[in-house]
Amino acid sequence: QVQLVESGGGLVQTGGSLRLSCAASGRIFSINVRGWYRQAPGKERELVARITRGGGTDYADSVKGRFAISRDDAKKAVYLQMNSLKPEDTAVYYCNAGIRYGPGTLENDYWGQGTQVTVSS
Image 1 (cartoon, one colour):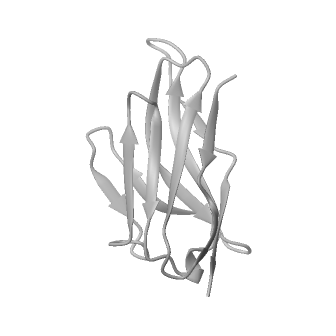
Image 2 (cartoon, rainbow, N blue to C red):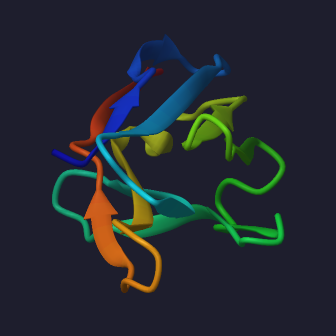
């Protein structure tokens, strides 16, 4: 069974850091890691950071200069380094990727189960 498994969330004080990880498991042919999203209580899911196949990155204005997205293609993993965390960063964070099961097949959209990040003031 193909899954995206996230880890690294937790409780941290304002100004602290966390590193989220997301890795694909199961039999896959290829993975196109797209990015990280988050959803705070009562709010819609929003894009936090994304990374292109060529390695280009893009960030939400609210996290620019504090967060950094990276990936390890060999490990089929994507990471989100979060520094200078603020209470408004509190949310459930999700990774998103397109996964192909074999050559010539279409990408299937996958989401991780989410990992809770809580920043205390």
